[in-house]
Image 1 (cartoon, rainbow, N blue to C red):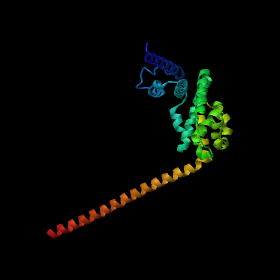
Image 2: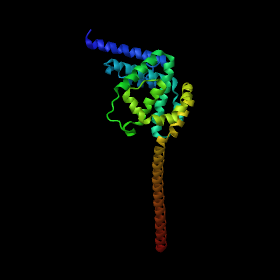
Image 3: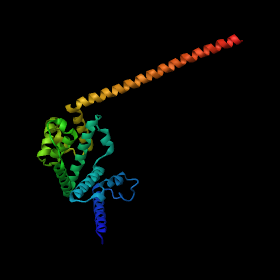
Image 4: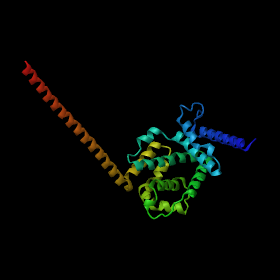
Length: 259
């Protein structure tokens, strides 16, 4: 057997192993039977098994497969949408919080899932690279929030670089979230309670208050432009009505004159 055949055979075995694990975790045993009706069948392609070349690639694929399966099992899309914040930045953090929730439920199910997530997140943290960190502007809030959630909920140990990245934002997160962490952990299994509380926390955070005002201002400006456009249209309509009346009057006079 050639090396290419061995590689293809190995990748096929890996795919079968990940698919089988996905089925067991998600309780979906029809993932391959009706792919056109199962949206997770298509999403499963994101693993890109053809690109698996190193152990780190396999660790990532295994963790992402577990995460996707747990999302299917534990995350209700209607509840997720119902409690989603209006602010766009809050929505991103809300999505991270929900991902952490269903992953944590998975770690309680199987030790193997916990091991997969820990290895993958440890790997992500080691691969992070930041050149000069001087202020909040150098660290995106979404990146800092993910590190905060990994530290507080997954118990992932940060290295010196990621700890420094979180440093700029940690006080803001602690001020808003720390007092609710126990409640959130106690309600991991109750998505509605967990997500509604997190949505409330995020929308009340001071760091997003300015964005809320900006978005409201932009919305008002758009509404004002729409109203102006409507006024212009109404004005044009009135002008056309007046013009039609004038033309009708002239036509009537011409008619009278002819008679």
